[in-house]
Length: 293
Ligand SMILES: [Cu+2]
Image (cartoon, rainbow, N blue to C red; front, side):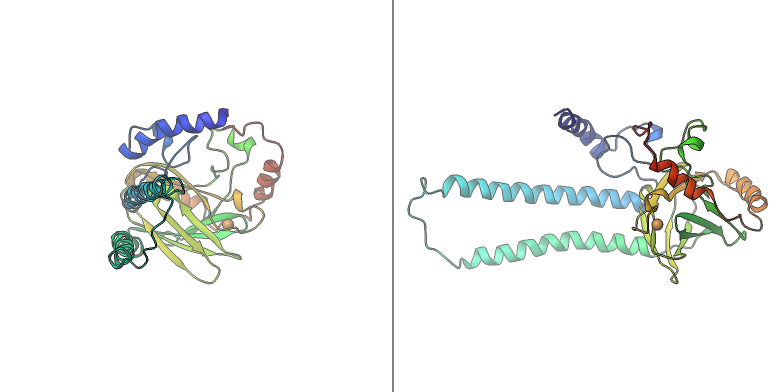
């Protein structure tokens, strides 16, 4: 009962935020928040469009649902055995049959046109300023910056490491080495799987693309706001599927150049094979004391 009340209360508070894109705390960006309704806050033009298309569809399905509910109520009230003891035997009302075929088709066209425009916008990669290759592995991501010729592994932080940090990164989302990108630049993301299919997804950027062994997939994003954005592998890829998060730091161009110089030295020659991934999973298998975080 308490849970139900909480859902109702959060819905009452959440709806104005959802529709007005209201003021949210800076910490609410780039990750899920408690009692969240709707999508994560957008940080790219693609996600802006995805969110507005989602709202557009919400209005359409709400109207359809109310209309169908109205028809059902009318049938229940007007045509029950008591109110209407001798039912009409009418069949084949031509106008009605044409209407209930044409109107849904028109609604689908109204949905399809913006849907295809958005799809083309997502798929058509604009000239990029930076390329990052994300390789899905069992069970972590590796990022390579082909223009700068370095590669590194990005492993989820387990609780002992995470709670030492200030502020602690969100549970199951923070990693040791994040992927860094400059703000307001088009980033081409190449995605591939090393051994099984994974999927690279960052909700705030509106990207989700399969990482398939032997096939290089591509997507893009242009983050328009600095901050830390989290995502997760979105393909069931094995026992630690839930423990291979994605962390993207969007920073100013100067901060990115400084990071790039450091990274070239730090990751020169590649990293040793990770050993802490199994540790992270073992850590999670234990009962969690801080799972409210
Ligand atoms: Cu995966």
